[in-house]
Length: 284
Image (tube, rainbow, N blue to C red):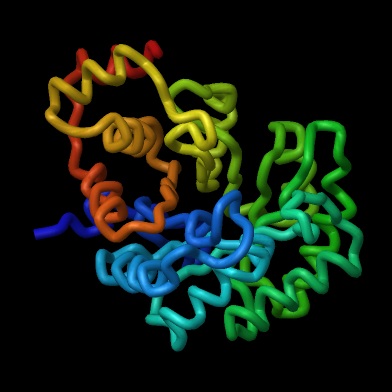
């Protein structure tokens, strides 16, 4: 029997009705190569989304600039009308050009159009969470956050998240509006956000690591390989399980375009490390 996503436990944002299983799903890999164009196997992409929900995943991360427009269209085709409790999270602040390039943009007109595009393509009246994608520590987060706060007040957005941000940007954003989640690069070997994760946990804010398995440069570690061999599982499952063990506010959203791989990712929620194994992984 396949492990349900609920085995990872739940995270609830204090003071809100927002509560999800900590094992989620990232839809980015459903698009074509380099997150551009349609999937090679559209029927498998639709089946992956249905399987994710069947496994109890109730938190799907997407964006209208994946494809562009591809993952949102697939999500709507596969899952609309959406089951109760399913939380769809999108990102805004970027767009793709005709050659597949990634371009950042955060003026008010663009952000409003981006939210409208996500709502239209997903078939929604309001987004559960919209995350603001930043580009670097030098970027001003205050102005675009004020735009998101206004759209929240207008009823287009329930909650606000932020992505690719520093601790100072997190603090500046929270001065303007409540933030329910932070999505940054973080994994077993990319540990720059350790202190930020702990502070967010104290404040009841979710941390959602992107590239949990290394992204375009897969994780490589002799110690990781050794622990996986001891447990009798894959290094990918160990890396996901380590993230879940790292802090109770971490939500994982591994992406895949394969149902078999999806099931393997969810099964990582059942892994338990010995104190020695956990210490060795922590030291990587």
